[in-house]
Each structure stands twice: as C-alpha cells, then as structure tokens.
Length: 120
Image (cartoon, rainbow, N blue to C red; front, side, top):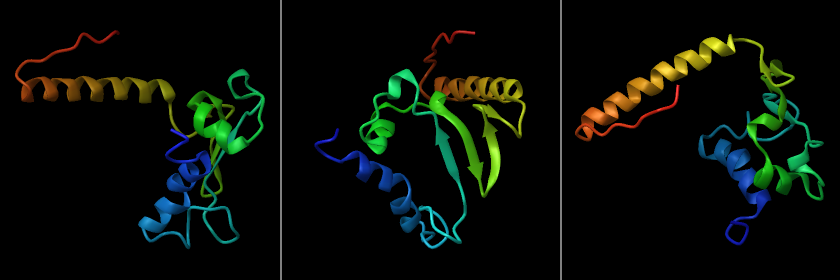
C-alpha cells in the first residue's frame, strides 16, 4: 500500500535496511565499491512493466520473477536468460514437489486429517 510505505521505502527494507538489521551493511545491501555484488537484471521492456516512469515503483508494484533475466551472486552469473545456470531446474521442481507433499502430510497430521487435493 503506497499510502503506508513508498516503493522506495519497500526497496530499502529489502536491501540496505535488512543488511543493517543483520549487521552486514558494510558488506551487502547497496551497490558500492568493495561490497558483494549480488544483482538482479530485469527486462523492463516487458508488457507488464511498461511504460516505466519510475523504475523502482514499477518493479515493486508490478515486477515478477518471470521478469528477471540475469542474477549475479558475489559477481558470478547464476541465472542467465531466465534459466538457473548452476542446477537442473527439472530436478529442483521435482524435489520441491516432494518437499511440498511432505509438508502437507505433516500439516495434515498436526491438524487432524486436513487434506488438500493438489494438482499434479
């Protein structure tokens, strides 16, 4: 809600403010010489992100994971053209499905047999 927090405040909460809370603001949280280079490159030419009057506001209110084209972690490319470079995505999806099934089973046991039919 922009009446509570501006898009710029939301961005700060997820970057430099979070780093400050963790006591890591000298190492991460902003783009500065000597800090770790974790960056996301977003294609701002996508239909849901145009026109761009204020890039921060556009990203905070309209950005989605599908808009991320490249991710660098500590200066290394880990996502290129929207594809994870360091892992088998099919394997990750399969493992996430197994983990989700296990989590739902634990939830069901804890709350007395509650179950949800999940799509395959």
